[in-house]
Image 1 (cartoon, rainbow, N blue to C red):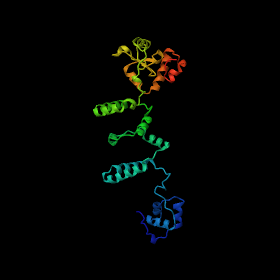
Image 2: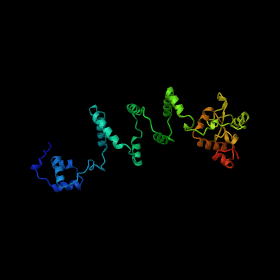
Image 3: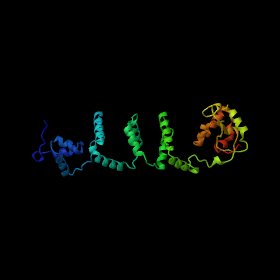
Image 4: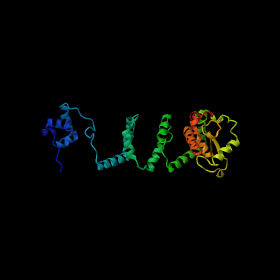
Length: 303
């Protein structure tokens, strides 16, 4: 049987000891109330009368670590509280308050690492996926946000499932005529991120003829130099691509055979592909690019 709390006016409390425990031993008000078997209001009154500054909530737990069992209990309680329909009004207010608190705040690198480790390997439920999808539908990301997302995903390998899902989502989007027309208009001319100053409208030099193209295909054994598919397996001739996009430089050191699919990849990440193919041709045919520095770095005509 628990001991009954003795009213403060019927019990003499050691005020000096209470103040010392509170200030120096960091014993919280509720713990002091339990220790002296009195109400919390009595402890608060004593501290106030002794001009003790009251600490904010959470001060006495700062630095302390919860056991795994305590964490599980807290997690279970929080999870049930957020889902309980009786608490939805309070949940709404809590979300608004948290939104205001966290708006504009940034996680430190240490905090990001901790979050990453904590969520690593965690499987997202279908219900959560649907909730996230619903929340994101119709939202228009700013250019700054898109750039940050793009930089964050750059270089990250994508699984086959992720690639298939992205491809499926893109196809579904382009089935909408309105979206398709809007997308095409937003990528015309210099609005396109792969715009190269209108190089596609420039004329080829006189040396870029069928005879020259056939020489390049023959040199490359009638295979695409990127995916290595033979020309005989295609329904059309291999394209002859100008590595540095300069149509006036139709020379063997600057041209390579590509299939239609691989040729389409050349419109983006041009610097990478220039370096890639110059190194490839150097290794395959021993072309001396040291004497053609301007060709590699500035993309001008043969010296």
